Image (tube, rainbow, N blue to C red; front, side):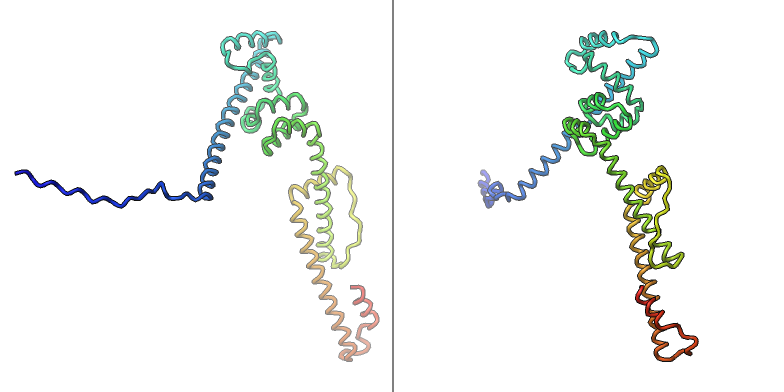
Length: 283
């Protein structure tokens, strides 16, 4: 006898999750987040590839420079190298004689390998070539390299900043800021010493003049070591002390005047009322 047929399982309620409407704002935010992650990863990969390429160029240039110095090879060896390397690596476009000469110059102007790894290797080759062509002073060249990295300058922007002599203009602005900070430091010093040391309430003495070299050195100290904000705080504190001292003197004079007028002191020991009123007026 065959067993009775099993009952079919009850059908579950149909739930179509795909039919749930997607929130447009949430979806847009999700897509935007994914785009940022992809772009960041591609950027990091590009930086890594660029860094390895720049380090390769620097090493090639250093090796060429070293061989020429040790073995007395002339400039013609670079043309020979370009031909041999080009045949060995036909897919590489950066092994021309012109580029090999740039590599040699690149290694010559950047002898510090650590600086190359930390700074210069973060710039594209086109930026480095522009720096080689346009800037001869090492300090100025290093400054432009750092600025290009910090601000993400394109090669055209870098060229514009070099052509507009941004290095010199920034130096002038920094010096002006330093001198302003130094002036404020002098103000703070004069106020503080006037109130706390000599007890003067009005500072109208002239700043002691030193030679220009010492003045500029002190200005740089004020701006970059002490800073402008601490100078301003010192001035504010000194002015508070000054106002407090003035108020204290006013109260003392008013008390003396009150004592005189109330005959609380002997006439021969009391201050001159007119003198006290003049002192009060001057405060």
